[in-house]
Length: 395
Image (cartoon, rainbow, N blue to C red; front, side):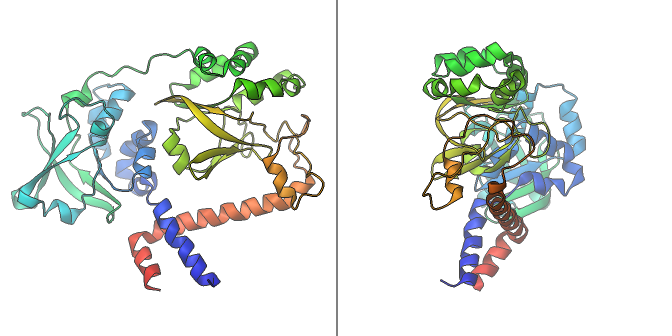
């Protein structure tokens, strides 16, 4: 296969991986800025992006202000907005050509299992005069029906973003929803094979930082007891600040389900992050495995302790070692490439500071090149959409 064909094949495959990004779509329309913000805050944006076929019923800032004036909790707002996301494709043409004039579709609220009975289903009606109405199955009869306003973005048959006149009302979705039960993180980890790690968090006084981060979303990568036992001699050589940084390095201040981690590879900031390129790591998939790469060591997720928005805790098979605290192990004699050292364990801890070992330069150049290419492909696919896909197939 020659190079042009190989590149085109790669781009075609990329169109299925990077299908759509709801945050970018709505960012082009300031009138939906509040709706866009709450899709991100409630983590619904990530759920939308990972689904191959989806319809998003956006409402403008005025409609969102009406919703916010009722002072619902964030978790109730998530349920309400979930009603506005359909697990099927409804573009403008399809909405105006509904068979027999009416159909019922399921929303993400129904898919979460939070909705009882028929709650979470939405009726779509093609009315006289070219209007299309939307009404949750369990909505109050005296509530006005939301109507179709316009198409915002359509990528058949992947994602359709449309504007509707106002918020969809449902007693089930609007029912008071309490925040997730306050969990004792250290106790949770201790009971599920991560007691050594939880003990270190408590001893170092880092447990408060982890606990305070839960409400806004938190993902923890917890080394197993056996893994941490062999690491302890090196842990004891760290300074007090170094120990705290290492522990916080295992937390990400955003909720990530396993599905989100599998579909959102790339750099992630941690609770220890101090600035650009400081105490971050890369999430990278290999088949069904989710790996965390720190440039010093690569760990693999081996199990899930808890995965309930806004908290996810995963068990990993290695301690995550930041390059700010640990030097990269030199390549073993006889290895084919110095790059292979990234798969091995690190050398004894040392004050790496802002310096990167000289023998990492060529490897970092390659990483930057690969990263640039991935960003290029993602941006190109996002711009091309289905038209670009047909163009590439034609050639």
